[in-house]
Structure formats: structure tokens, C-alpha cells
Image (cartoon, rainbow, N blue to C red; front, side):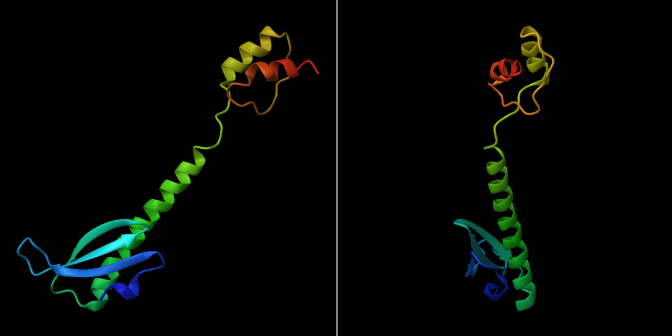
Length: 115
């Protein structure tokens, strides 16, 4: 039923009627290992059911992509606080400021300012 509207990495398994007493059909979507069950209204035709399943599958896929992007952004090292760096540079008596200093390397940057 809704299987034709799913993109790569998504699966759909049409299930039994919903257990809440309605005539809705339950469809299980599998996106990247995560499963989501959704109820398709009984009066929905095949195209409407495919559109619902496709929209939910696309939403789940977008959430996974966003989570992966957020995890990748966390791998970047933090930059040094400008005020902490200013104190270290002043203690070394130099005014030549480095452009990019990673957190934890403030003293190295201030020592390099002598060269």
C-alpha cells in the first residue's frame, strides 16, 4: 500500500487494524533501524496512505540527518575565550594576537607570540 512512496532506507509493513476500536490500518515504518507505527485512516485511498507514510518517513529521516550533523559539529574543538586569552597574552607582555586558538592552548599561543 504505502511501500511505493518510501525512499531508500525506509521500509513499510502494513499491519492489522488498529487496536483502539477504529477501522484505521496500522503501518510500521522502519527508518535507519528506528521503527514508527502510524495509523492510516480507513477512508484514505492508496495515494493518501502513501502520502502520509512518505511524509512521516521523510520527517524521521530528516531528524536522523540533523542528529548526525549535530554530532559531527560536536567533534570540532572549542575555541579559547577571548578574555582568558587576553589575560595570558598580557602576562607574557605581548600584543601580537593569534587568530585561532583552541581551548587549552592559551599558554602555547601566548608563548608563540614572542617569535
